[in-house]
Amino acid sequence: MAGTDRPQLLISIKDSVSGSQELVAGFAEEPLKVGDADRAAAVYCLDDLRSKPTFDAAAFHDQLQTKEFGGVLISAAALPSTQSLLQDNSRQLPHGTLCIADVQKSGRGRGGNTWTSPPGCLMFSLLTRLDIEGTRLPYIQYLISLALVEAIEAEAAPLLSDDASAGGLGVRIKWPNDLYIGTEKLGGVLCNSVFRDRQFQVIVGVGLNVANEEPSTCINVRLRERAAQLGHPDASSLSVSPEAVLAGALARVEGYLDTLQRRGFRPMEAAYTAAWLHTDQQVTIKGSEGEEDAVVIIKGLTEEGYLLAVDSAGERFSLSPNGNSLNFFHGLIKRKLPPPEEDLYVC
Image 1 (cartoon, helix red, strand yellow):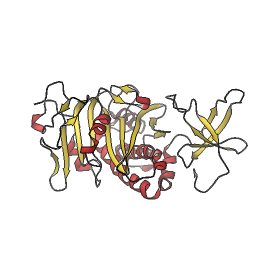
Image 2 (cartoon, rainbow, N blue to C red; image 1 turned 135 degrees about the horizontal axis):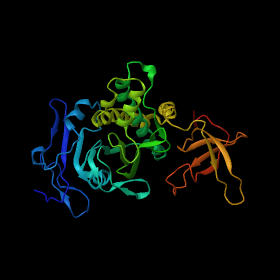
Image 3 (cartoon, rainbow, N blue to C red; image 1 turned 45 degrees about the horizontal axis):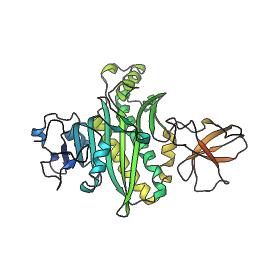
Image 4 (spheres, rainbow, N blue to C red; image 1 turned 60 degrees about the vertical axis):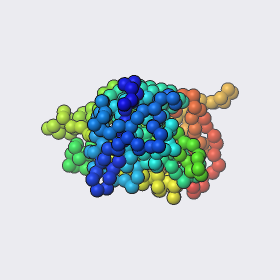
């Protein structure tokens, strides 16, 4: 049995007949690598786990409606990084493999930043292999964000009210890859891609505050607050499950990425811009030395996936991040665009 300092993994596979099944040792020809390259964690079935993950694989698979995504689930009570585990073992794992940890000790963020996750946060990574044009890669994180917003709202809506006009939680996308409720961050998306064997391997990482009230807010807190506003008699006890939210999100992601490969982003564009924060948002772009600041209005996305904006004279600009700021609306770089064409994503 593996040493106590090594993370223990539970691998579950959705079986179309008997539901979610735990996989015994011997899933891979070689042990999965966890953390340092010279350390490997053996794979144990459920009875061998000293610390069982809290994520309920059976409940998740009962609700999962996908062809491939999430069919293979690797879960653990604690891991250094779900993103690293999939990346280090990608050649051994099938398309659609999902990795979840209750706690990550070296989670990955933008710019290579690492962080330790709080309990109650849904943290997962998804391994995908896509036959996709490289120019469409930026849209993957947009579609993951959209799928998460839709799944959260779909789970919350029936708990809040039978009246559709009551509205939902108000989860919105902050471009390019964050989820917000009001002014508080709810989660984020990170994608790492490599071109291998004539396909793009894209590992999607997500951190979503479901039941953790720190460091900002979480779905269940805002659900109870919204329910109280609507006069729900059981507002204080309402909650959504991470298993249901994730199952709903993966079903949407699988469909969106299939469409992206075949038809591009346009079929999902209206849904995306309806779910983000930025239509008609005014942004001030700091001018370079000797150049005045520019005030522009965001109107949508360019064909490259950057922000499309116009100034008071009707000049069009592409806005992209400079890569140095965690706040993408500070330090944006503007590039003047030619007159509009039909293939621009304008909302």
